[in-house]
Length: 223
Figure 1 (tube, helix red, strand yellow):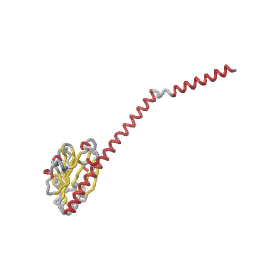
Figure 2 (cartoon, one colour):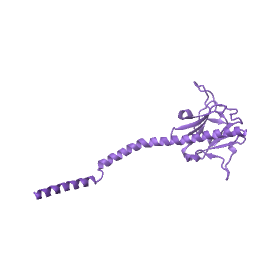
Figure 3 (cartoon, one colour):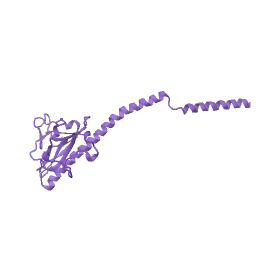
Figure 4 (cartoon, one colour):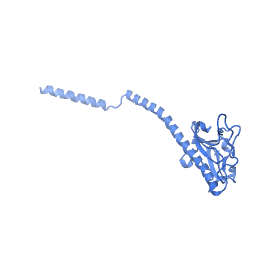
C-alpha cells in the first residue's frame, strides 16, 4: 500500500513539473506569428490616422497664427491711426510673415542682426519650416486676380511677398475680392492658405469685405 501511494505521488509530481515547464517555456511560434500580424494590422490602421491628426493639428495652429497676425495689423492700424499691413512670403521653403506700417514696402524689409523682422510661421508653436506650405490667391496688395481668383499652387509664387493692408479705420482700401463665381452670391475673398507638403489638409483665413471681416475655412474652401 505504501509503495502504491509513493508511485501515485511521484506521478502527480512529474505531471505538475511537466506542466510547469510547458507553461514557463514562453509563446509558441504560432502565437508569436499571431501577435506579430495583429501588431501589423493595428499599426496599418493607427499610423495613417495619427499622421492625419498631427497634420490637422499642425495646420490648424499655423492658421491661427495667420489670423492673429492679420488681427494684430488691423488693431495696430486703428490704434495708431496709420495704415498697417501683413506681408507673407516663402524663403528657402520657409513660410514667413511680417507686420509693418504700410509705408514700408515688404520687399525692402530685411532682418537685422539684432532685429528679426520676418517671423517664421509656426516657430512659436514648435512647427518646423518644412512641415508647412503657404499659399495665397493675392496678385497684388488687397487684390485677387480678377480672371482667376483661385489660390496659386506654385511653390515659388510667394518668393515675392504678397500683402494685405488695413487703413487707419481697420478697413481695406481699394480692395478687389475677385469676381462672383457662377452660382455663388459672394466673391472669393483674399485668402491666405496653410497646408502640409504631403497631404490635402488645408486651412485658410479669408478676408471677405472692405470692413476687414475675416473667417477661417478648410480643405476645398481654401482652393
